[in-house]
Image (cartoon, rainbow, N blue to C red; front, side, top):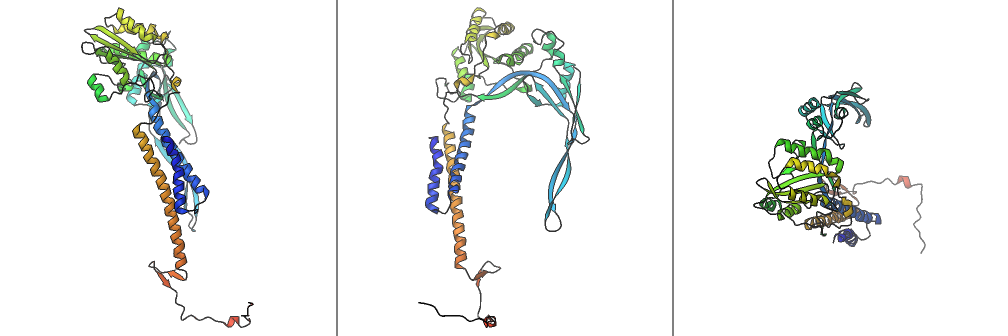
Length: 429
């Protein structure tokens, strides 16, 4: 059906030709066809991109902080001014732009973000690392130089035997976990393939007791949902995602349900609500009652769900909920995790939904109709101007916009200038 929209510009050109005849040359029709197809293609691409892009969450930690001192930028520009003689001239001018103090942090996976001075001061005092004073020189800087300072987490880690926060207390106390958002191509979530999941609305999910992705308050999000735990335990699992997240391409979530009200089938509902989860996620759903794990179901996109089966076996033999023991077990079995490459699903076809299709149809129709209307209107204006010129030859336009005839009754023509010439009025038949 979308293919019809790319043929529509040709139909618009036929209509235009029927109305205006051969008034326009071929390049005008080529512009209508090319421009309309380009417009349709752009809107189609944007809609398709929106339908196939998914947001995933990556674990990292703050690796460096930076403070840029306030500085003034010197910017040269040219301005066109009158030269006093009815013309114009180019004048070079200089303006100064003030840049206030800025604070940034850099993560272990190379991203950077702005933050406030209070957090900057807290981190540099927490690390206790030396300050690196740097400068930038340039002609665009007022005074020729500006300054900034950095604190590097690596200065602390380089003095320790390991950078693993679970093997060194100093690292555990100073590592600051971060959750970052990243988008990737996910053709599964809106496809009609065998991977299609049940469509569950947010309202229905709330009624069923399913969990949404948590908000990343304070630069990070908790991986434990549906259960209140001690801050120390929560911190352990946050650091798990921060340290091992980029290293093993994993994002861990623990989702707890009340097993007295919800059976193991709710885990599949949770999987459907999250559209199978993101490619880097390992989601463990646990049904608990009075501190006992009644059931466990894990899901991910691993080609072979080895880790999912092993974690389910783990809780069969260890039904008492012990999150610290689970944390240790997960660290020991991380080598069995392998993140799924979603490029394996590039063969899946994704179509626009009904709303997107009709929106694209309406926009394409509007663009073609507007192009034809403007060109036809321009044709009529040019024809009317020509007709007015032809009908009013010998007339002039007065100050009020009306045509007045030229009165030649009292005009005198001096024919003396023709006295030296003879006019032959004879002609041959």
